[in-house]
Image (tube, rainbow, N blue to C red; front, side, top):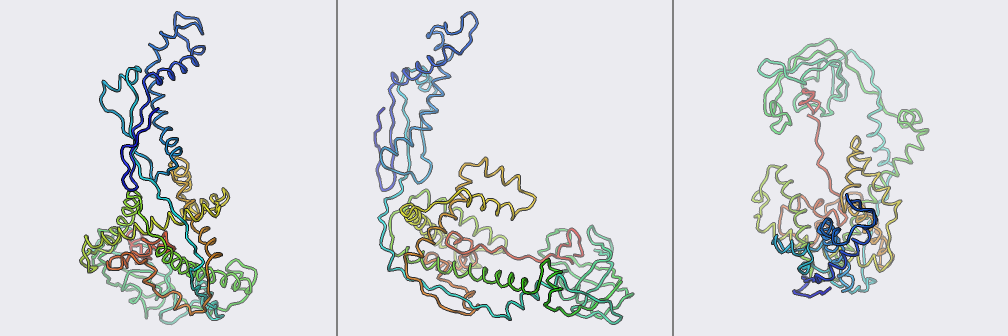
Length: 492
């Protein structure tokens, strides 16, 4: 076998691989010898089929299998022998001439193919002891724990029927029938629907018109569905709702005690406070870690400057660009609305893609040298978390990770990266600083990465574009529509 380097430009490599026809024939004959005693051909006893006849019957098929195996396995072997790592799957090219291909399968011509790839650049690790980060820490006040418990307790709040008029905060029980142009529409009817006035569960203008009503009252109210309402047949339309009030109930005071804890499925008020405090600590802890991670990455970005594999950058850019355009489309905006142009935005986001690829390679090298490993148990827990987030889709998710090449790596990569960050935290200087929750949660434009500062569109999708750098992608919160789901329920 001959391996001839035909291109070595920057990180790009191209190799020409030539395997002589006589070597291919020899391999084919070995395979024929292996199957000789197993094949059954009419007119011949097992093991007595002449090799020439076997070659005539099975030669091309076996040679095709050999070619596929060589093209599949040899590139990895060749790159390993050259001490190189391909940034992406190498591109293999063979002759497309049918006559030439037929000669190869008949062992009448050498097998030739090219391997094109980009190498992962050699990274010389630098001293990180000079990296300094500030870890912002929030002291959680008892009032904050109490406030959070009261929010949670809303689901367990008691209501007591009253004779007076309904006010904000009261719960009304109603029957309603929605109509557009005098005709009832699907999903616009409900009976014994419970609604806490002021909760903003229903479309704008609906709840306000129930204030002042009392049990037994009937009223027709008029509302306009939002222009962005999900049901196209109702979006922007004026509708009437025939309302019958069946009950008005006043909210009872919430007391943080063992009885409340029991309603929420816990054994005591102390346990409730402990769990809520832990949840708040976890939320702030995640924000703290994101900010620390950004500081580390920004300083690593200053330490390391090298050429990045073009294909990796392009793939990363496409992911970011797809998300940016999705965000703009959902918001009904253009790049001009964000005070930039598509050309400027592309340039800035490409810088961001280059940064992310470069930092990913640096973290990978640091982790490899430090012996960072992701265990099977950790991968399993990550998979279970995916399943938990999408109830009812467990089988599809499991099938995806089972049948999709590289899917498991998408679980491993973020786990590996976080473990590398943990390793770095033990190597760098970390100073704790007590801050208020407002300071911790304040927007930090530096956290959006030093690339892509000019494009205002970046600010909208920064969390998503920088998700791999520690910012969590925050899904937009949507209210259910006259139960803010009025397309299905439709007053709702």
